[in-house]
Image 1 (cartoon, helix red, strand yellow):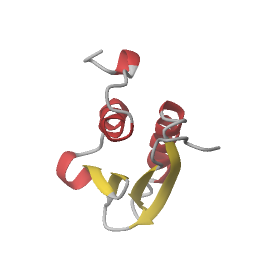
Image 2 (tube, rainbow, N blue to C red; image 1 turned 90 degrees about the horizontal axis):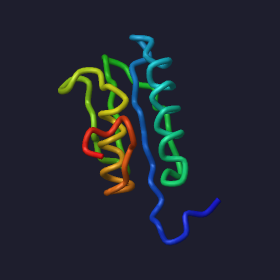
Image 3 (tube, rainbow, N blue to C red; image 1 turned 60 degrees about the vertical axis):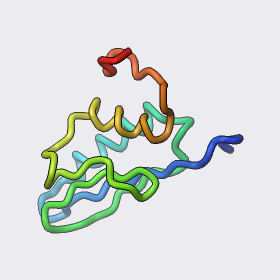
Image 4 (spheres, rainbow, N blue to C red; image 1 turned 120 degrees about the horizontal axis):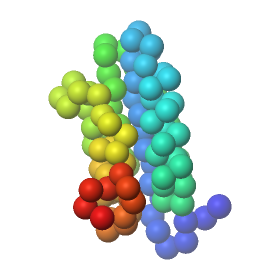
Length: 97
């Protein structure tokens, strides 16, 4: 699948293996892949330690559990949308639409 003239976007979810946060990371990954199936070219789950749970878009952190707590999926979707598909409505999960 090609992205045409759109640049490829990569999301990474780094999660703590010691805390057993893989199910949470995998669920969030599924939500993002479903929502942004045409905008994302890759979504990676990156094992980490020390309580890490960070969502990055194209290498830039958009959510860090240590600073912001655990994210609600709608909040992460808005942040990812702002990077990969600005102006796109997220429907019922987007209070601004």
